Amino acid sequence: MQNPGQIWVQINTINKERGEFQGNHEVRICEALAFTFDLEFTPAVITFFSSGESRKILRSYDDTTSKKSSHPPLSWKNPKPDGEVWVIFERYLNHVASYTKPYWHPLSGHVMSVLRASRASLDAQALSLAVAVEGLLKLKFKGLGQPTSEVLGQIEKLRELIKESDLDAGFKNRLNGTISGLTSPRPKDILHELAATGQIRESLAKTWGRLRNAHAHADSQDPEKIAELLKDCQKVRTLFNELVFIVISYEGSYTDYSAENWPIRRNARPRLLSAPNDAH
Image (cartoon, rainbow, N blue to C red; front, side, top):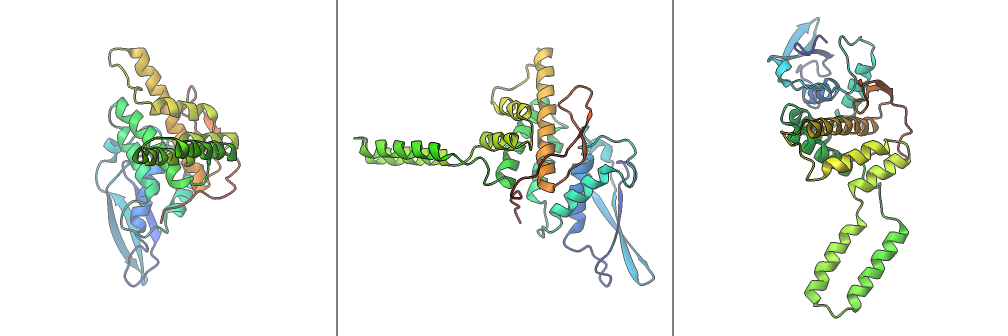
């Protein structure tokens, strides 16, 4: 692979007779490139035939520099062929490769929304990051953050109080419908459990909660608030990357945008007892 302005990915074709990628791999490769290098590009597929075998070259035919952000999971200048950048690429591609539908894997949908928002206004970045983290938690971390038995007991007592009250039957049904939402884990609860088990940092989870607040908008006339919101976006971007690492089982180096000077941090946290749910 060359620089991000000229992306080339060469892969041995599995189906030699028809000369095609198997399982829409060109789409999956683009998804893995999008996350690994924090860029979006429009692919062109070039096929070569040699000695009875076919090879395909996946190449960008437009200027990707206009579609590039500045927060790849692992900052790089000239990635080495055996560098950890390619481990991230491999893990991501392995995760999405079995998805057979002719459009983005659900995980990549969140990745692309974050990438595209990074080229928009700061408010758009903040909103997209907050929503993407929430969507990723709901998509891939089902089963975490469940209410405790004590909370469920309190909910049951509340149901009994409503049942025994002299409230209108229709209003009781509305209340019970609202209470049902208390039995489902909130994104905040999932993040808290991930932090408690060492999967993520509690400080980043708290920053996400602040960013998710509808009032977290930058005042274009207040440089300090703009700078604060920018830092929050960088912290939540790091949280988003760390959640993706859990999903794709990546344990290695990455850039910590939540800290000053963006140091390289080692991702070697314990994995979940059960793998995050996939959506095929």
